[in-house]
Length: 297
Figure 1 (spheres, one colour):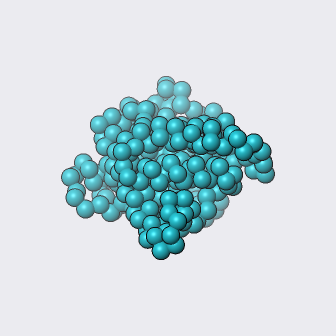
Figure 2 (cartoon, rainbow, N blue to C red; figure 1 turned 90 degrees about the vertical axis):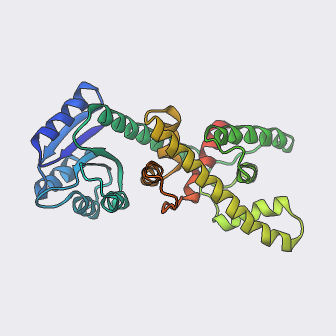
């Protein structure tokens, strides 16, 4: 059962959120406070899974409180509550570690949707931990004859994931498929090698001439980055159209830093031609690898 603390100097907002959590059976509210040191002590003592925290409060604002809580060892999830739409403040909130943003005035549908997403994210986090535990120290012994069969299945699995994100037709999708085949067939550790090494592995698979390989590494890096950017654009566009779409709920928090998804959604909504969002390619590849590993079991 997920536990929550609600920190907001507005009594009505706290009560409304608590009622939504209770009525929708989303977990248990184990504490609430108006802010300040009282809120910090409450969170450190109760150690809830999730803290819903107001951005603007009289003693300590939400961003400062999150920084202070992390300094004191709290490692739960944060959801920011605010009516502020200033992009710099919203961006700063994501930088200090919030997972999602709930807008005021409080809307029960948005609160329920956000809390369901964080529940899904926590479930996925636990699944990844379990995958890592189960694979740590495990030696996969397979006959040489089975490798071609495994490679085909890896290709099919990765292709389906890329198709679901709408990027199978991108030039970098071929590089992503090869990367996953090489990593799995070489029985790599759960953690990926440095990106440059991974790109070199792909280039050596594609090329024989050393000079061509050096050029190909840079080309692969650019193709994969463009493909991941395209995936982010597709997922963010999907979120703007339907925030509760299953693909958005699955891919947005899993393959990307959710603050990047939110910022990209804002850029698309405002028709901004120049993007300030930097994609986390390493995270994308790591999750793609773990997802593929899980599906070939």
